[in-house]
Image (cartoon, rainbow, N blue to C red):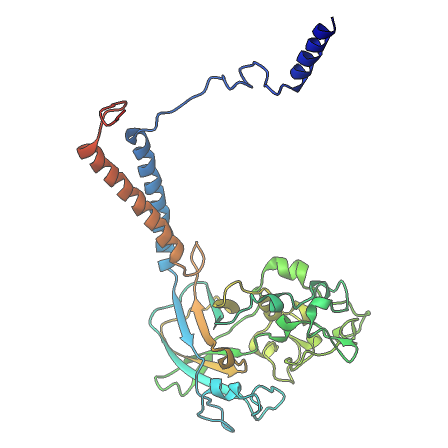
Length: 383
């Protein structure tokens, strides 16, 4: 009796511990299923179809990129044409020496200016032409540099600077406005485009440049806001500006960006800059850091003006040093097409994948012709 009871207990215990799935079609994987037999005859048409799609998209992207007109002018080592100290010398070398005062914009007599004559071989006759500045070997993606900012301050949520802004968080108890390395390194070259009236470019006509709508709309509407002053008071009396410190590399405080014309600075309305204070679009564009060391940022737009081929002059206020880190500077004039700016890489990639699909189909067709075998044949099997 006891032995029978023990056996019954052991069998019940084993039954409880069993992890066997229930004997159903779903749990035992006996549901009906479609099991395609992948043969060259069934697969190759799909590979060919994919290749046609990739080739069509690639050709469209490449043609769209080819329709973009672009002119790139490097001015890293342009010569100083401004009368005074350093005239005729390379502006890049002059600014590389921080002791001679060329990086100090508060010294009006010590400043580098380049006049570069360029020939446009084709008409830039689109409704809108874009002017960019391009920098090479400039690592905006460095971790210490990228994090050295305080977005809450730029949105006017707080007037203080966060710990991430180090080493430019405060000065003698006053917070920098704005704080951080990103803002302090704001690009400050000035670029003007002039149409030459004769071959010698003895007289010129300025081309109107606008800095309006050069930044992302989401940045202007959400990420950059000025603190609010009291009714009827100027912006510089607003909290955060009135008691804020000016960044070391800025010639004017943040509240005067886009308004001050008495002090020379790149964000002055004199050079087409748009927006005041934290809402200055040159500042907004610069604060969107680049992911790669070679990048371009939108500087100005040329609206509703035909830029015919011919001779032009770039008048550049050379204020931004790059030689110390072996950088380069360019001005880029460009139109756009339906697929954006000039970038043939994506189109070439699509064309290459499509060509690879066609090549694969051709190779497999040849193998089927000369080395094919019947489906299910066992003549190549050994056992």
